[in-house]
Image (tube, rainbow, N blue to C red; front, top):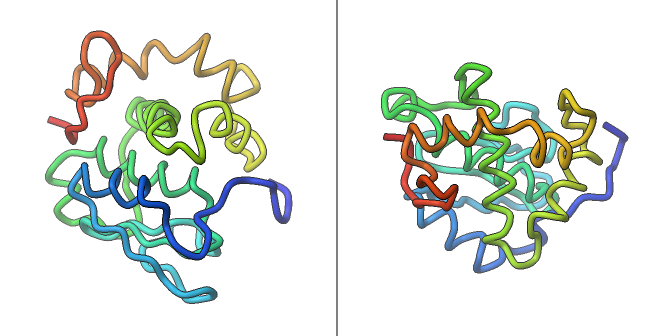
Length: 166
């Protein structure tokens, strides 16, 4: 990851689509002031934080980070969700589901979209077996789709159900 990658960020106020998407999954979006410490942030700095049913963002929080944490919330078990504070946990299969879901959810944010999400993930330094987020998503993510379908997050046609993991 470079010092300041060119990725789309939250901005001074979350877009209505960002707020609506969080609410659709029963998540409270908490917008913090510039420079405030982000509670529940795994990576610190400007990265989104996850604590209970709340996602914390600032104006400099990358949208991919918001969607990644939202996807963790959606993909974790109810038991883990109830005690959530910073570390979403989960195994490799769930993490693949999280990354896939984050890309799909990007289409719910008109300012972001899937194509920009894939570029931002690469710019930020996400790593995938095939070398890029796009290559992984289009050529190597069948297991992620199966996982998300098995847990009720996607339907059999790989469409969002807008439900958290069952």
